[in-house]
Image (cartoon, rainbow, N blue to C red; front, side):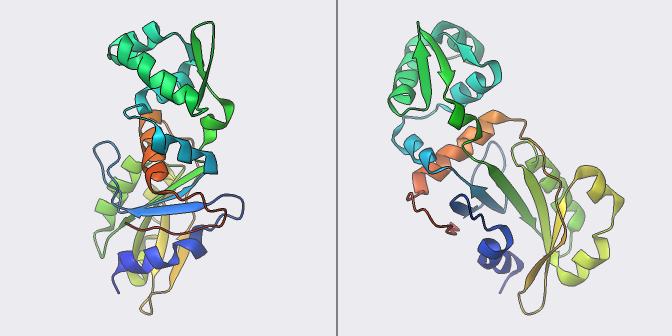
Length: 218
């Protein structure tokens, strides 16, 4: 079994959430990148985005940043025609993602944290520095970012100062495909909310609404 497949098979044990359903995917397109593995704890309400016409990630990200805005202001800020913005806002309102008062729209409170935790994992057989570079990039939308390596490599590099500086965690994959967290990742808030809500839409497209944690690797 490959290092990536070994990690994928252990996702429910490594990152299981007793409070939220768990969703995982291999190489989803998020912005300009494709993390090897993404693990998401999600509120079941995220499914509402499956029936909303995209793109809306920019709208949701903007409303999360500013709190509330009129369609004309949103149009000016993200560079889309106001008619298009109104159409998307109406769809989001119908799905209870946004609310409106006197033509001012705001993100519903539960949607500020619709994905309580996003974990990304970059997998390499030996080139840990390349994995680290990719894992550092993933921090712009992930709460925690890991690199996964064969156990001998992982144990050799897990105390590298750069890992602590960047807050990157390390997963070690043994010869029998056992996987251990040898260095925990430091949790941080996502910074690029457009990617956050883009991922929420990807999750919604595949999420079944099950109440138990599940693992879906595509």
